[in-house]
Length: 173
Image 1 (cartoon, helix red, strand yellow):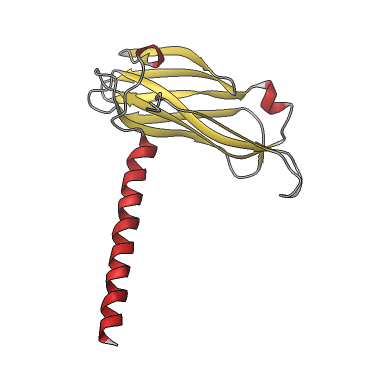
Image 2: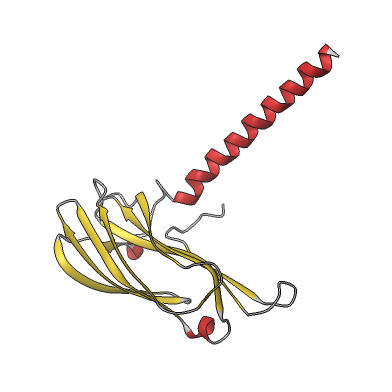
C-alpha cells in the first residue's frame, strides 16, 4: 500500500512538472517577445506627430494615427475587414489586433492589445484609441491579428474562416 502511494505521488509530480514546462514554453511562443522582425515589415516610430499610416493584408486594412511624446505613445485608428470576409460571413466569433514594439536590432520587446471584438458579433469596422508607455529601446512597431469569421446557423452546418497575420517569419527548418 505504501509503495503504491509513493508511485502515485511521483506520477503527480512528474505530470505537474511537464504541464508547467509546457505552459511556460508556450507563453513565450505566443508573445513573440525576442523574435526578429524583417526590416521591410517594421514601421519606424518617429518623435512627435501625429503621423498617419496604413497597413493592408489579405484580410483587412488598418488605418492608423500615432503620436509619440517622450515615453507616451498614442495609437488610434480603424480596422476595416476586406470584401472576402464581409461578403461571405456575418459574424466575428473573435478578433484580436495587437501592436508589437521592436528594438534597434529588430527584436520584439513588448506587445500590447489594441482592439478586440466581442464573441459572435456582426462584422463591422472596429475603431480604437489606446495610449501606452513606450517601452525603453522601442524604435519601430509591427502589427499582428487573429480572428475567426462565421456564418449564422448551428455548429454542425456553418462555415468558419480562421485568419491571422504574424509579425515574424517562422523558420521551418
